[in-house]
Image 1 (cartoon, rainbow, N blue to C red):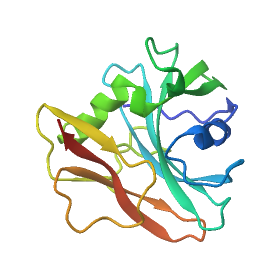
Image 2 (spheres, helix red, strand yellow; image 1 turned 120 degrees about the vertical axis):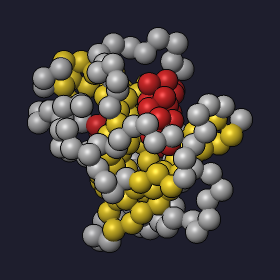
Image 3 (cartoon, rainbow, N blue to C red; image 1 turned 90 degrees about the vertical axis):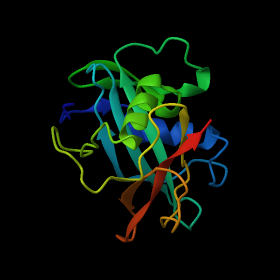
Length: 192
């Protein structure tokens, strides 16, 4: 199980995401700097214990109507070889672990493998802020195939879970700035 350290990160994850998010083609906010708050998420364990994996929900209130984004993150002790330039969100100094390379998890093979394992029922979601604590609020509906599938990550989160999902999908929650709880589909199986 991954350990959640109670320490500092400089710059913070939210500061790094604030600079990175407007450059993404799926960003739905206005031009300029987003106004982000952390709104939810969960973690997955890397079986090798090398890569930190977090699925963070941030809400942008810069445009008036809040928009929730899912940002899968990987935390690495060294640069990820052969990663595309746009995959690196930034580096940060972790108060316990030192320099961390923080990547968009959609480009990290360890993150994608563990997300696939979760959709097959072979991994257990972990609480975002507590070490060694499963998160039962994160649920998988249906079971993904053993092989031959990709994972579609919903970057802009819908505020409701669709009634009928044709494939296995991951449902989790977040909180809007006014305190209202929401749940939606974070990711789904996409057959090749």
